[in-house]
Image (cartoon, rainbow over all chains, first blue to last red; front, side):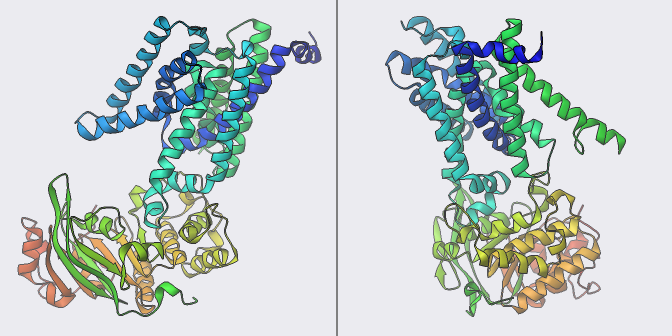
Length: 279
Length: 272
């Protein structure tokens, strides 16, 4: 098949065009956020929050509320619970994170099986970007734009917060606010991301592009552009790939992302494996 | 460097009165009182867990004292902090040197407290950054990623940030840990310039050689102030014994008995 028809043929379907546009937007936003997640060392937190939003999404669907609202409450709530248990007991943080997010996730699973609704479990777990409804698209676009605006608006403060929270606090920057801002944005991005790749793989959207870019540059600005670029490229390529191979869309998107990371891991000019070997 | 409002003459830089801090019922500081004047280099000496970092945290407004008050430049702490009067220079081990940020941006972060919410630098912010970097001789390296700096350059970058902030009180956390002698000399030279400008430096250390070398005053601390005053008066065998309890005997040697170290010399060897 010639490359042009490989590229154009899927675009004859409306659902493909929608899927490509929505996931490009979501991937770009998650890609930007992933830079902060990688630098702050919040990858595990991203994993936890993205799983913990599940009961929120289910309840919101059941009550006919915007799913962003449910995700937000449970995402931020889970982190509050993690913080509280960590402070009041002797259990180490990774154990607390593990037990809290699986607890929330289990609650979500149970709710789905008992609450009568139109939600399909596999769509939440693995995403359903090819069959995304108009209503979901509107919400996802709204969330993405909101996350994008917040990240751009507080960009410099968030960089400072990731780099040197002590200094930030000592000059009067409200680090508590920034902490919860980043958490809220994470919860929102997770729920946007689960539209495209589902809850299980959304953490890849929140970590992999940032990690890929981190190996390629020592400049934050460039890092964000590379992360956004690689995330968008991965989601587009992944959807095409899944179309032509008739394979899982979420799987393909994340596989391309992982592939790009491997390339960067091996060939990054300064921080790649080969460059380090040569030194 | 142009005079900064925060540096306006005020004979008294730091006043701590009857400060008590406790964490979850455990007393970290008890009845700490001290007054440090402008243009003083003051060593803060104590063992690990003696409350040095708690005192720093209190001076940055991070902990709520259960009793007592702190004022800086004659202002209540909150107001002084809002005026960017206090700068903290972190221990080098606590910095993420792989962070994708370059030197000028780190120094610019010293200016954030005085900027609008979007933190868009104005002309005087850029000028302050430039002046600070020139003073520590890092201007040519301003576009380097911070991890590409040598050990001494890294220290100076963070000192430049405190300068750019215009702080009149500098809190330095173990500034000489893992520093070679040449760098140490350079830093001490800078400290002495800061002193001449009327800034007050509070230097936490557990290496006594530095204290006798160039500190004007010393605070010996162990949950409370054991002794405070001119270095020569405070550094008695008895005071040091009270501060360090069961430390090796040579640590307790009074400076009058030991050969008086020059600035930058470490008669007892490096800490690490």
